Amino acid sequence: MTLQPEWRFPATNPTDFKWGIVAYSFGSQSIGPGDEYPPRTSFASYIFHPDKGRVIDEYQLVYITKGSGFFTSESLEGRSVKIKAGDGFLLFPGEWHTYKPDLETGWDEYWIHFVGNIADMWTREGLLDKSDPVLHIGIKEEILNLYRSGERIMKKQAAGYQQAMCGICANIICSAVYYHRNNLPENSRISEVVDHVRVSIGTHLQDIKAPDVAEDLDFSYSKFRKEFKNYTGMPPGAYIRNIRISQAKELLTNTDMSIKEIAFECGFGNADYFCVAFRKNVGMSATEYRKRTRYNLWE
Image (cartoon, rainbow, N blue to C red):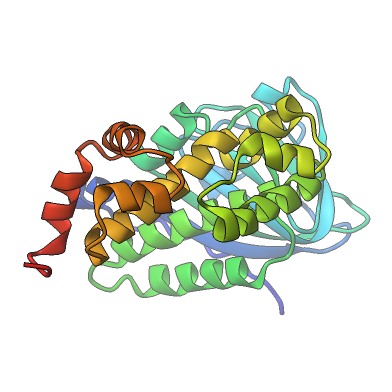
């Protein structure tokens, strides 16, 4: 497939921004070995000299599907990062950066330009990190299809298209982060550990304990806890407790079991501990949750 530059900067209105993400452009282009970069057909205000770099006022995710090159940015302190097929890199508003394909290989690139308070929140909370902007995504047809859908929708610009673009942008970014995290070498074993914990929870919800799982997997508990939290975003004890709370919510809504029976079934040991944990996690008592969700089915 021959990729062609597609720059589209549609008009936006205040309502578009209320959705949290506004897409300014979707596009793709193919740079052959030895070709000038960026090509002269690029949108004038985005032409930059790779040796000097540039600063822009929106976010971008550039996704490379063929060839190789390099990327660097202000937060990388000038350190050049090798980019290969399957990699993506994030550009941030006000952040100096530069990039270009290798002369020997060229590259195929897809990009998305976007702004909005959702992207600002992701950055503020460290979910998108200026100091770690390169994502090792792999060649994922589902992400390519999202880019292609975005180009088609933006080209037509039918009523409500920015709302569709908001969803596509969020899907691309979140999917890219998902694949990146699962492609990291240090996550290969811990992913197996998390899968083991999930299976163990499914078969031993009443009596599973995180230290026992660590011992079964020949981990020290401190190492197990640290790696599990890095991978899932929460320590193993909290992860198990959340599963237990979710199961308890299901039983409260869909069965006539007593609070004591549910506490035992979900591995809380006693009803008092269950009630304290449930209120802390859900923000209401188990009895109140049951009343709100059962709709008098059992009355």
